Length: 97
Image 1 (cartoon, helix red, strand yellow):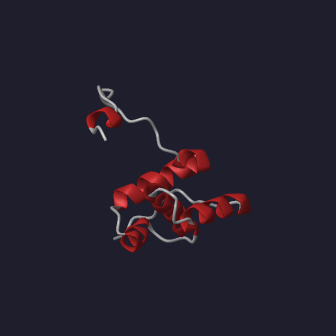
Image 2 (cartoon, helix red, strand yellow):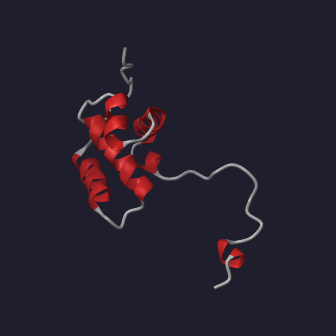
């Protein structure tokens, strides 16, 4: 039995325009495009399982971004600092060109 998400989107017209713009741009980072598409599909009332299948991404990822958007709106879709030890070398110093 599919689970129903407790988080509804209720996008404003400004939020919808911003998300559609990100989802359409071929220069947008892939992760940003997927996040925008998740929210746009969730706003149409689709369950997480269907969104995950359409976007070929795990259901847990859909659930995560749906919840973050519901809690913080557009700023919730921005990347958060990652845990773990800081890099000892920058990517440029590892691969001299």
